[in-house]
Image (cartoon, rainbow, N blue to C red; front, top):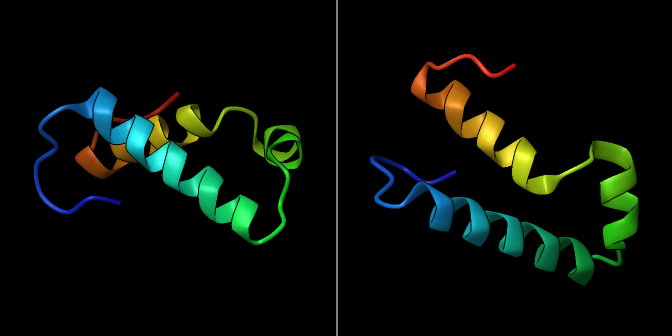
Length: 58
């Protein structure tokens, strides 16, 4: 997770999701496996950022 203020939240989510998927791929984890297990990586990251800021995620 980024430290401090996030300048562009959409860009931050996109960058984090891309990095996570690349790291998973490098470990041999297929994107389909991730999507099956957690759903949208973007949604998970958005929820985490909202919780970090103190805004409850639904």
